[in-house]
Amino acid sequence: MASRPYQAIIFDLLSALLNSWKLWNEIAGSEEVGLRWRKRYIQLTYAAGRYRPYEGIIGEAADAEGIPEDRAARLIQSWAALEPWPETTEVLDRLQRQAALAIVTNCSETLAGKAIEKTQIHFTEVVTAERAGFYKPHPQAYRLALEELNINPARALFVAGSPADLPGAASVGMSVFWHNRMGLSLLDASVHPKFVSDSLWPLIKVVGD
Image 1 (tube, rainbow, N blue to C red):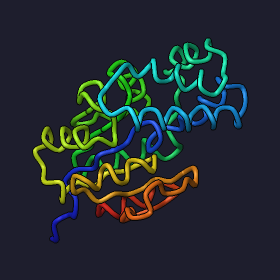
Image 2 (cartoon, rainbow, N blue to C red; image 1 turned 120 degrees about the vertical axis):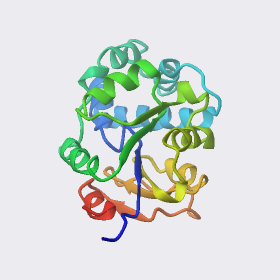
Image 3 (tube, rainbow, N blue to C red; image 1 turned 135 degrees about the vertical axis):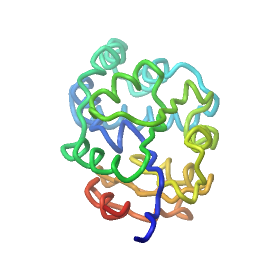
Image 4 (cartoon, rainbow, N blue to C red; image 1 turned 90 degrees about the horizontal axis):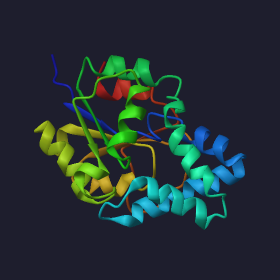
């Protein structure tokens, strides 16, 4: 029997596995405002580099977009209301029979724990920006996951939800599957994912079910 191409699948959490856009929009009061807020938050986290409080960045993004300051607190308080994409749990359940599953997320430790519960899946390793000391796409977050999995990056597949994860994961030698549910554009035209889909279902074939 031929060996499977990947021994580990490492996931972004909030976009690749969860529909965090929906919660942002609900708290913001509209899809338009929620989208602006979420995009500014993504810009701030990806520009942050060394870790500083994640919850504070959510508030900074709200302030930058003129969103009432109480909305950031409401978003954090509502974190347990995050919902997985419809196929998330079934796809993860099938994948965990074929490879080790891990998370690399810009969440804080506390919020990552709440979000991961929504997937109903146990992950072999969970690396948060808080624990790594750096926000993605700094290489340290991805490297820490690979080190703890004790795996060569060539044998790991990173499942991105945000376009900024593409150059970050690729920089440490991982292939990337971009779950581009929201139809986002590339941030770096020189870096392309190996796989692109608006669904997680193709992962099953990619991993070799």
